[in-house]
Structure formats: structure tokens, C-alpha cells
Length: 77
Image 1 (cartoon, rainbow, N blue to C red):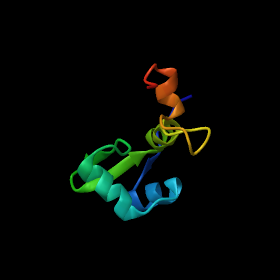
Image 2 (tube, one colour; image 1 turned 30 degrees about the vertical axis):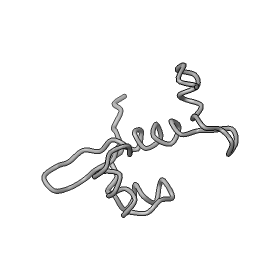
Image 3 (cartoon, one colour; image 1 turned 60 degrees about the vertical axis):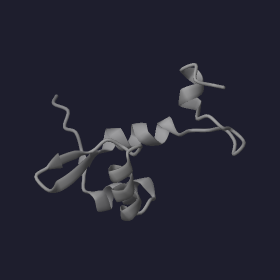
Image 4 (cartoon, rainbow, N blue to C red; image 1 turned 135 degrees about the horizontal axis):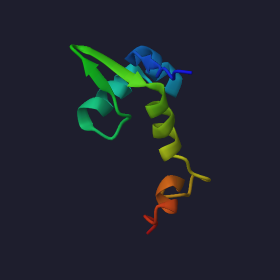
């Protein structure tokens, strides 16, 4: 059975993240956002990258300074 990766246009990626299209555009410009690919002028996001991006920012409370993914990797201050 073949596995096909799902690619989303920025509008759909923003909806998937419950974010704004302009937020994704700013993150592309500044860095720090989910990975994306460019096909000519077209921007595409893999759904698996969006899931990984959201999982990377998981915290248990608002007082957590470091996301859980960084705590498990030994980056806790």
C-alpha cells in the first residue's frame, strides 16, 4: 500500500492550525514556523509537518516556559 503525503495551500494550512494566513506568511519570512515547500510561486505545507509543528509547542500549563518537546530533549533551564 502506498502512502501519499497530503499538501495544503496556505489558506488550508492556516485553517488547520486555527491561525491566520498572514501569520503563516510572517513565519515564512521570519522563520520559526512550520516547514514549507515552494513550487514556483506556490507555497505548500505537508500536513505531517503542521502536526509536528503543533506538537513541538505542547505545554502542560501557561506557566511553563519551555515546551514539553524541549524538556524531554534536555533543554530545560
